[in-house]
Length: 593
Image (cartoon, rainbow, N blue to C red; front, side, top):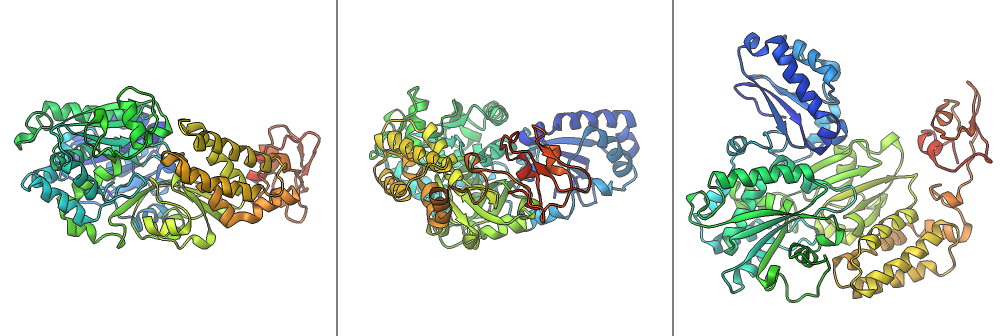
């Protein structure tokens, strides 16, 4: 909930999801209604509209908070311009919230088990306002850091237990110490904002909602390692994030927060944005540096590591957006405070992007150690259409698929690796009983194959052969020995690939074989897809005793091949059926096989 203030505040989600849902029209409607009603004169207070960052419950945009001094903030969801006059007339003028339009109990449930630290300013402050940032502890972290020696700053980060949030989980303070110890006066700092996992948008939301917070975290890191220049490598598909971050950088330069003598604190630091072309492999740090240098984004062998020889052959430290966003809060509140959150091996909170067959998709920030079951069911409301949970893909395309029996796994680095997945950058794709795990493995392997830079043979050729085997299996052409061949190739590729993309790309295949081997065997031996998802293996029919005669399936059929009359069981004309699965997906009663 938003904090109360002296003026009436209207907080409107203007992240990418908010704008896509019509946030600008809602803003225009509020401004027009304020003028039409002469609202400020009637209530005797100024009415401020704040364009905030993402709240997390992205599927319910446009989200709007009405904050009246002395009253609890009220959140509305699915707000449209047509609803605005009613909110102004009933809530803002008569102090009677529009109850039917207020976000339901699920919104409180959504927030209940979260601990929003990195997101504490997102959804609360005007994302483009320096004054708002300063009013919420902004730049007090760097002021505290410069009262300490650089070595002491690094020790404080080590003491906090912060681990890199980009996927590897390497201790951040240790990484900084390597770069600090490298000889040379010229060093570089890089923020990796090349977020490429399907369905992941954590870093984008931080950049859109709290760009000054990222700048402060990078300033602390720069002071600690002795660096004067930094880059934010952000994919060009994030235009709003780039726009807001660039505005924040420009404002900081203008105000003397960045420059020769940052905030008159006695150290120099400047930064700029490098827009990437969207290559997934550029999330790997050596490929990322090659891209900044103007070369093709391809990995190189390590050692030497970037801390010794990085960007333009100079010592370089690379962390991702979420890692830098954590740093400020360590210095706002102390390392001991930060270390008190989470588990022994993973301190602090972790942001996850939930997509797929879950009721409330979006972003959640929970303490490390929260179970996967709590995230999916308690925070995000469970499985869409109340179907059975089948699996969750954790860690992006390089992660693993965890079944129902692994739902009690804690979301920390060590527990997820033990379960056969990985934390990754934080993407969680939830799957229900209609999802074919062989097809999911094929989907993610196809993604990593396309995104491979092609430099090393195991990744370039090996992934292609594995994909061809999976495609055969999903087409009903699988052969005896295919499962064992996939496993052998997966382990060989993991061992011999040059970078993290190739080393982790086989994980979805290995985890689905580990937990869902019976589905592979059904495809190969019985030429059947147990989840009815692989089109070449589909033969649609309506099960009479399951059909509720509701008429949904003929309405969604794109080729009108389903015959139905009110009160009658539906019938599929197979000669017309294109096996598009629209009817199967729409039927809530599992009456279509």
